Length: 303
Ligand code: NAD
Image (cartoon, rainbow, N blue to C red; front, side):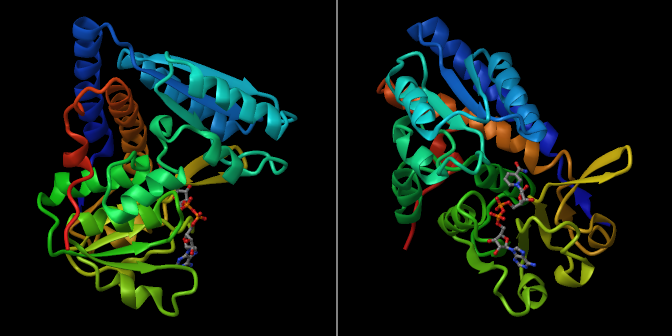
């Protein structure tokens, strides 16, 4: 039977490290890192995520700025709000909760955020830095996945990692991060003819397809470490539950280790957001990166 990888415990530990570093910044430098989160509309799941991000930011001692805007907010009004936050010296990290209402172009919004404050790491300058091995801010979910893998496996060099999904939020940046870890990386996606055969080759398998239960036991190499990024809300009458992309019942009989949903990648994503905010604050003030160093989280590039 597979070992469960406890994302909640890992996230608690990372948040504690961030809280310690925030305490030191406040005491020694009088600097209070600030995270601004913008939500447009009233999507209940997004409201929960935004509330949780604000609450966790306050818990680690950061200042939290929550901007809840109505669905009818125009793109121009949203861009103006972002420009104000870009100028605000109390704000070191800015996150706009996706998805946005259909009348707002997410690309325009992502481009409008100051790359130095782009704690989601989606701005093309940060995405480019990750792709070419430069120093930028790295998307939170892939960062969390790598941390979970390292907690289970230690050194990742030489492992064959298969990433299922190629989105700019998860699959692509994760493939870049795993390459930096010296993994052999294969990316499978919706146009891959036989994804099961590809996935079965992975010592590491990260499922980020957004298809509940897609990955079954015959997709997994015996002993592999499996990270389930997928989150789908299933509603059946009054009962609601979150399910991942991995069929945990069958896969747990084959895999060596597996993340649960919920309690795996989700909590790590928020902890990495806080760490990114701390990194952004330090860099904006010309201070060295805080522990764990961004390099430990998003390590060196290689040939
Ligand atoms: P997306 O829809 O943008 O991308 C999905 C990717 O999966 C695409 O690249 C597509 O090619 C691929 N895909 C879809 N169906 C496939 C199939 N049958 N076989 C192979 N590949 C297939 O989604 P996303 O934003 O990358 O998110 C993926 C999942 O991860 C979603 O369930 C999302 O809710 C979840 N997610 C979780 C967190 C977290 O914090 N835990 C964060 C981000 C996303």
